[in-house]
Length: 136
Image 1 (tube, helix red, strand yellow):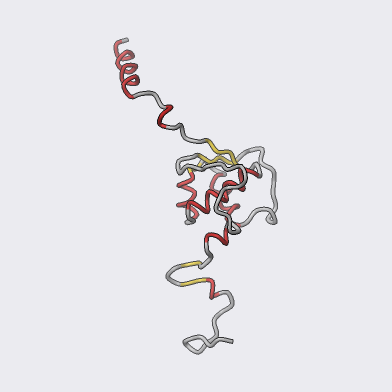
Image 2 (image 1 turned 45 degrees about the vertical axis):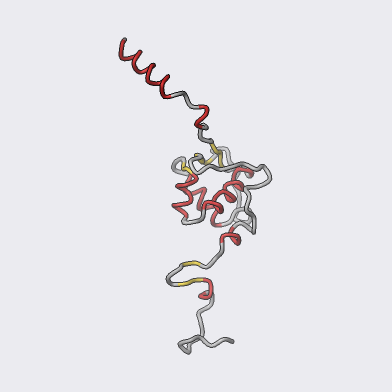
């Protein structure tokens, strides 16, 4: 047994926590070493909106980890963006994307992707519409 610097043995589990840095669980441990959000290859933009699917199957704790449950709990009251979920869970965005991929494949959440800028109407057209409405 390794002697603690202050003479007392470390408490069980304390090797996984640092007072200043917090939990020492690496991101790849939370995703099982995965870096991509599942075989579907879905890309989660930071502003993609995640909503809890009301018809989602009830899954027990053997299927979902605590991080998955935290994401579900955050999406339960209202739709959240990927960036908000990362901030609220204090997890890296890459980890959030992988976990959301799991939840999407299990049918727990739906994701609405933002409209690409190329598909948005031109600002000039919008100004002309506003001017036309004002003229009425």
